[in-house]
Amino acid sequence: MHMKQFYCFACIIIFTLSCSGGNIINTASADKLIPLVSFVFDDGYETDYTVAKDIFSLQGEVACTAVVTNWLNTENYLSVSQLLELQKDGWEILSHTESHPDLKTLSESQIESELSNSKSILENQGLTVKNLVYPFNKTNAIVKKIAAKYYRSGREGDSMLNSYVLDRYELKSYSLTHDLSKIKSYVDNAYSEKKWLILFHHHIYAKIKISDQKGNFILGEKLFFQPSGAKGKYTASGFVFPGTAIYFAPLSGIPQTNDTITGQTSGATGKLGRVIYNEKEDIKYLIEYIHTNYPEMKIVTIDKGLDLMEIP
Figure 1 (cartoon, rainbow, N blue to C red):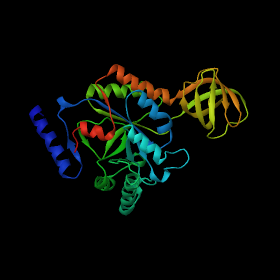
Figure 2 (cartoon, rainbow, N blue to C red):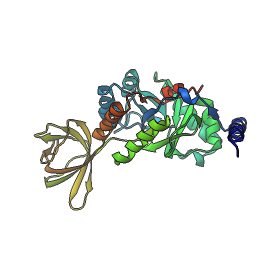
Figure 3 (tube, rainbow, N blue to C red):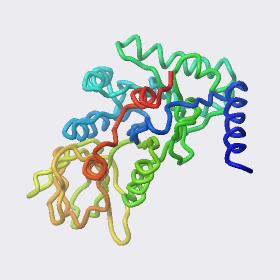
Figure 4 (cartoon, helix red, strand yellow):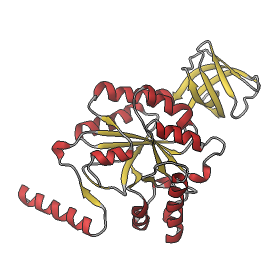
């Protein structure tokens, strides 16, 4: 096929998809595109406020929180006042439905209820909500059709970059894993290809191996690390071969090997053997990696990304 024929064929395909309700949009011309990155925290965990807010603020950036309205103001999840403060700081508030169902399993009336109610509940609290995240990253033609009645876009998974020809009700995203080299490669590819990388995550935890544990930590209590001075919120016990591990929300400071860990309420103690991962530091590193290596790459909310991709 000659190049001219190929371009004609491509244009026909895009036009056909657009006319068939596929929401395929040919956005900005390639010479106007800039590489983009968005960070989205799904489910509305309180660590969006207690941990992520400071990470992004200190770096001069913003992110998005996708909220399940039935979980608002409950233990370990965001309060309305925290959401309002995040929005004031430039974060985007996304809908993540009312009860977090697999929308593909629901009737049309149930989908309608989940999508319309979540938006109205948040907006009635003074929040601006324009975009949607599908629970479990699952969608289909019916879900997308109903989403289009209430939202500017919808995000799923599929581990792909978003190019200048895209379906705005099928935005692609990658999970923010603990494999930093892999995530860096996604950033590298988005930059070189001038595409939009959307990274999604949930609560922000650290996992450490401990030894010499005396007593039992209590769920939700504050942890103190000395001599590093770090602080955290205990969330669960775990395992690491060989030995014992604990999970906590890293509130401030950076825990260090050989720190003594003390639970504020329980009085339980332990010795930090090694940090298995610290998601707070990983996210901070990724933002710094983008700033250092690709200063022209923009970190944006979903709504701002749609603007820059020239999507109506």
